[in-house]
Amino acid sequence: QVQLVESGGGLVQPGGSLRLSCAASASIFMTRAMGWYRQAPGKQRELVAVITSGGSINYADYVKGRFTISRDNAKNTVYLQMNSLKPEDTAVYYCNAGVMVWSRYVPDYWGQGTQVTVSS
Image (tube, rainbow, N blue to C red; front, side, top):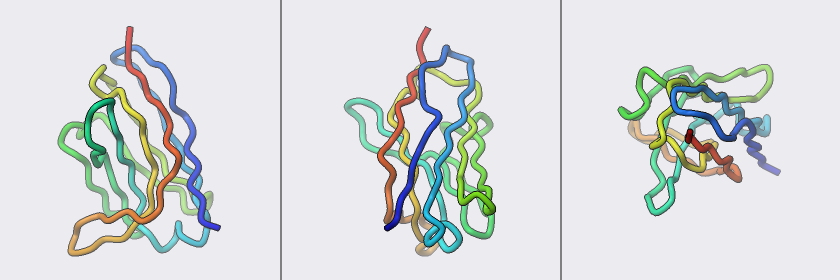
């Protein structure tokens, strides 16, 4: 059974940091790209960052320079380090696993999501 289990969300003040973790089933972790999406209230789900099995990384423009995605292959875990957080980063963050199709990330497995709230 494929599982993606996120952790690390919470409440943080503007300018603060959080690190999200996502533990994935070994059956998918080593063969798939891993990514993070987010969805704010009333908005569409949007891609935050993706890292391929080979280590190539892409970020959405709105998080470049502030967020860092990484993966630990020994632990089947992907991380999202979020620094300089802004209120507009408030959203449910979803871990996912997927494939690259013509350089476009297409997720096919999703975690349950973890809430990140940036507020003073």
